[in-house]
Image (tube, rainbow, N blue to C red; front, side):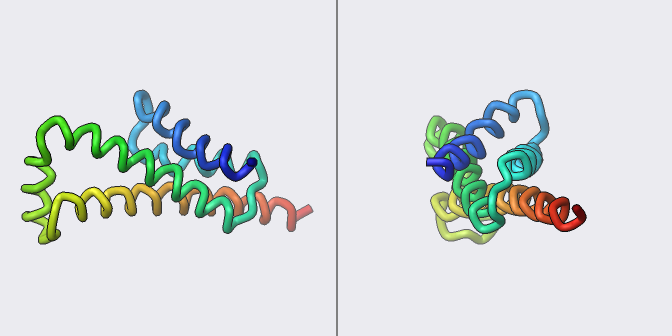
Amino acid sequence: MKKLLYILACGVLPALASFILPWYSIAIIPFIISYVLNMPPRVAFWGAFTGVAIYWLIAALMKDIPNNHVLSGMVAKVLFVQDYRALLAVTALIGGLVGGLGALSGAYMYEVKLRRK
């Protein structure tokens, strides 16, 4: 249950913060959450990766579906990606990695704090 709430927090809080903070808040917020909740590094990374990747995929789809995938199709051609779906997958992967690495940093920061005591 704690892991599910962690995934939800890592997906919802950056989504809410994106209205007032820059895009890299998707790394800062999972960092803070994993540090405060004392998450193990493995759980911290994969939980934040999942939460942020789902958030970025939903955000990209909300921008992409209304224009009938025209813009993402053009960008996919420029980036030599096969299809707009692959571009959306790469978008979710990059967002997930940024969030996961931020959370992993927070988990390791907590472990370093414990070792110094």
